[in-house]
Structure formats: C-alpha cells, structure tokens
Length: 281
Image (tube, rainbow, N blue to C red):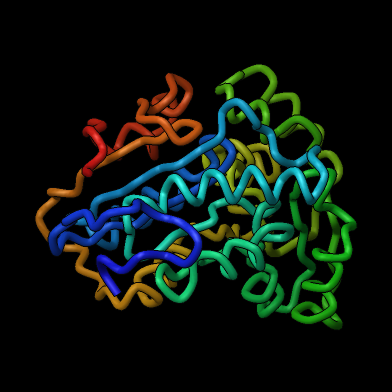
C-alpha cells in the first residue's frame, strides 16, 4: 500500500517517500492534536502530516455540501504526500464527508473517521453524558449511535456552545465559561462521559475538574487512542511504542506548508509532536 496513488488525487509524477511509516491527520483546526499525539505514542518513529483549513474553520456551522468540499481539499493536500492512512480527526467531518473522502481516496489510502465513543461508554451500564457541539447534539447521527449502542442506558446529550472555538484559540476564560456551562447541564449521577468533539480531549482534565471537583467522577471516553490504533491497523502497520522517537512532523495549512499555530503549543499534545520539517517531495 505504501507509495500507491489515491484515486482522484495525488501528484502527477511518482515521488519516492521511502519506507518510513507516515500517518496523515486532517481537521479544520487543532482538534487533530489529540489523535496525532496518540499515533506518536504508538509509533514514535512514524512521520506525521497534519493538514488543516484555518481559513475555513470552524466546519461545524457550514452546510454539509460546503464542509465536504473543504474536507476534500484538505484531504487531497494530505494525500499528495502518500500517507499509509488518513485520520479524519473531526466528528463533524466524519458525519458529513467520510463517504466522499473514502470514495475518492480508498483503496489507495485507508480513511479512518472519528466516532464518539458511545459504545464503550454505554457498556458500563450508564447513565452516560455526551458532550458535543450544538450541531451534533440531538442530530440524527448522534441519536442513531445512541439507538445502536446505548439501548436501555440513560443518556444525557449536553451541548457545549463555544467550547471547540475556545479550545481552538486557547482562550482560557472562554474555555472556563463553556466548560462551566456544560458541567451545569451534566447530571451528577453519570458514570461515563463521552467527549464527542476532538477539541474537547485537549482540555479533558479541566472538564473533569468542573464535572467532579470533589472526587474521581465519571469515566471519560475520548476517541484519540482508538482512532490512532485503527489507523495503524488499516495501514497494515504494527504498533511499536518502544521504537526510537525519530518521527518527523509536517504541517499543511490550506494545502501550503506551514507551522503549528501558537495556540497548538499551549497544549501538551501540540508541544510533544516535535519540530516541523519541510514537506517531502
């Protein structure tokens, strides 16, 4: 699979990328950091390619058609570098654009979407709270996941207006306000809490402190670890957490080489990814 051209995209001439493992991640902004850090833990020697759309973010308020076109552009920029797998590190893009992304890129490049971890959260018997963007909360997509994986379990859908945007800009006061508002809507008896937006995983400990200030509180369920493991599986790559930390980092902003935004470096996940290198090819 490594080195194969994706359907409908990629460079016009072959580019030699060698035998290094390369995983690409895409999002409108920095919500991909948690999954990128998870890939780095599983394969410290893997090259990471982060492709985002700073001019178009956030994707949540956009129409499905507009979002899909923007997601395809971001994915094509990543696919030109021939990764072994592409992670769609955005719940909203997974909902609306995953079929189009897979139709264009697979089977040449496996495309892995991000789904809220409702199934493992509900396995404990509940009750469960799902923190998500207002666009996702109550949506047919989320309600379908609840019906499929949480039958007989009490589920509270908690909208978190402004939280993803606050995390994107590392706005500390806005994060505190949005987290406090969502915590106030979260039933006190929940035993599991699903982080239904990739941005939220970057502030999981702040959410934990707001939801359960006096004790251990509910078990948190994010998607980053499972998505990273699935990307390696789909790419035919074995996990090697003890490998030498030689992985390189490439950043594409709107398809052009760039750097991690300053806000990304406010989070441990961003700081741990390493220095950005020039794109290959």
